[in-house]
Image (cartoon, rainbow, N blue to C red; front, top):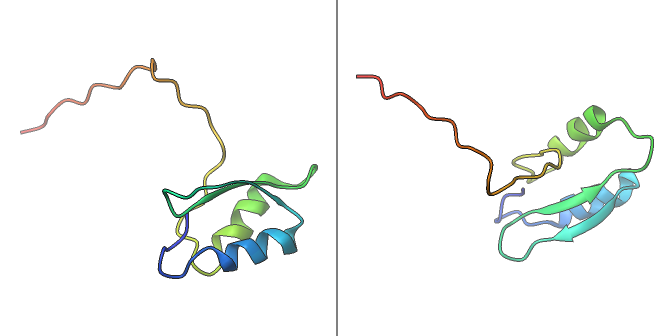
Length: 77
């Protein structure tokens, strides 16, 4: 995810410099999904992209299921 005011250009440049690939460039949210080069260390890639101007969050890809249970949280008074 990127800061909408800064835009995606710094991230696009960083993706190219890292040798990564843009998989999705979302239009309805200020973010994109990328694929890092094969053999790259995911922790180093996350650290690299977190430092890119305008990047506000970096998350690993994961799958959400609509049927996954939602944990119940007790209300504390």
